[in-house]
Image 1 (cartoon, rainbow, N blue to C red):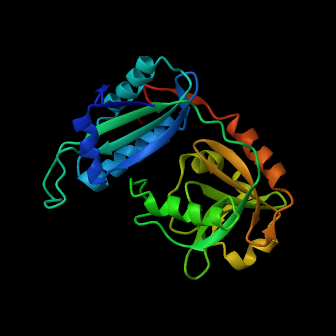
Image 2 (cartoon, rainbow, N blue to C red):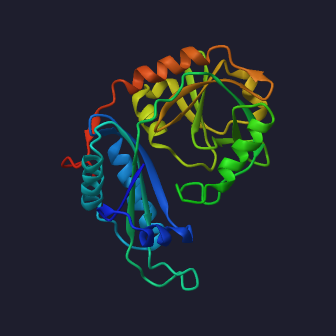
Length: 268
């Protein structure tokens, strides 16, 4: 992994500034120096910066730093994580205006395994779920607990049993040709939004999904920027058609354009 802060190789002082653990980020898969849903990732960064720091983020500069980081690493296929934080942020005076910093991490591309996953439902909801903030400890701890119990990951549900999201991904269900996206407090992912835009409106709906009704679905998939993968079961409920549902979703994503990083209009 290579790290860059504000367009330069990150120093120890730069990284020390990130230890306050106040900020937000987005993760992207880059292929041929382009990203699917780049505009959605940039919108996420802009909105998070406005909410957490109360200032505007220069998206053109961020794209330039992303492009330069790829060039410096001599990669056209890669994983990028763009984190917005501030070396000037003081938790003792959180309302003090500060300039933001941008940390770009470049690593090898991720190829999501196609293996079906078994999930364990866990009663949990992320803090400020609409933000992709850096407070990720509970997510990984919930996944760790699920693995300890013989599952592959954790599915978060509300105390009253409404399905929300996975540890680092969104979920969708299928009944026949109908697709259902759970409506609950969650981070709305870029891949989820691309799939919702790609599937025909008349075959999908967004509504509350109760854990008690999962047996009525025949398929389930998980998705994030790294890809789409099938869900074989949640607790004791198995889904016989998740593989076919996954192939259906991947077919939709194959039609999504790849936006070159730094191209005009990507920040719209």
